[in-house]
Image: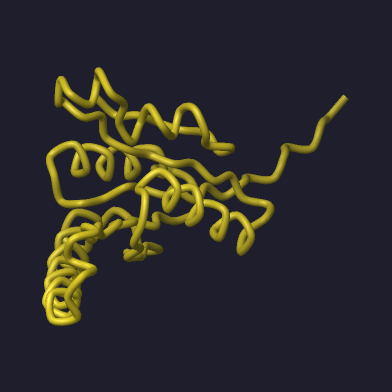
Length: 152
């Protein structure tokens, strides 16, 4: 009995990325997960605007300019980390609650590639406060409909 091998399923990895050491570890782990597979990586930078900044139009413009600069720096950093390892990658900037935005991007990636496996990868926080009151990984573990990898 010769069974036909199953077709390889592409893997689409959504990585929370802000340039921090945990985010770097998450991006490196995503590269290892993708090794030998087809697919791609979408790094997601979620910008956060405080509610007090929303009181001033000038402050909003200044913060948006800062976000643009951070996005540019993160895009360069991601490109350097992935160079020679992953050709199919992008960096997407969002604004809002980090867990919600990562899930939203994963939903969009899944909609664009419905036959592929979508995975979210994030770094764990070393903050004691996050361990007590919750963190992005904890919130994702509770709410993500996608497989989740939390990198120590």
